[in-house]
Length: 206
Image 1 (cartoon, one colour):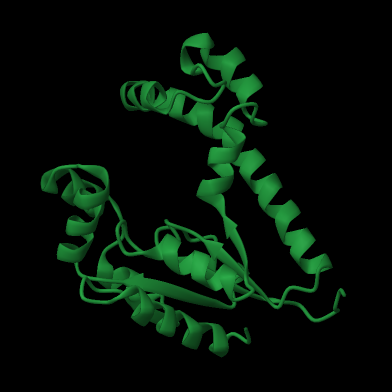
Image 2 (tube, helix red, strand yellow; image 1 turned 90 degrees about the vertical axis):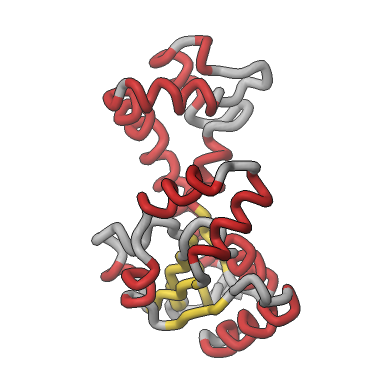
């Protein structure tokens, strides 16, 4: 049943390999509504996605794979060599992501959700979120832990992972904007992480 009480809106962020997405799924399992902009972006650029017609007409068939989805590897190469292509892609995808995000938020409001969690990888870097959020949760770990996790799951070299980390906000900058910090070091078990997330969920009324 819908309620007139406005839900809490919490931003969730963390560096690559921090475990942010895992924490987001745990909060969703506790009853939060998770708005994951990256996941929505993958949906609208997936097979038959809402962005694909405009992508195909703008960039051509070569940027659509056999399944009808965006050929991400080819597009990355184009965007790297031609910054204007990245701007064109963003002009197609970002409004759709915003639209789908707002639709999911409206559905959550209609359903009487008590907590909406926005998974925002670049929250610290962006200046536009502060006025829209009631609190910020940062998933935190050392750079060494980040590197080890990303190398293990992706096969990237340590140097490549370090390059990605260097392009993101610093650990201290993320912690500076945090209202709540979830520690997820290499020695942290899944059960320990779940216990931390349950404590955070309780803090936000889950």
